[in-house]
Length: 98
Image (cartoon, rainbow, N blue to C red; front, top):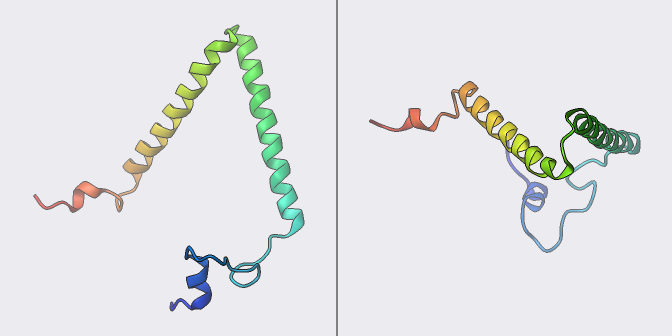
């Protein structure tokens, strides 16, 4: 595939960005609204589930400042490790000569 001038402008740090329609299509309004509504509902459910968990566990509010970030970091670490185990092509150490 040969990249034309439109592709070069789309991926450069030029002072003038490409205009809409030059390199990409506009997202339909109904799809955009659906995405925004899904994000708002997901955020609300997250807050509601967190409030229910805090009430059920009777944890003080300041404890969540430490528990929630620790859980999120643990989840990200777990996802990175799981992806490394599954992806044989991404194994950097198999390509090192011994």
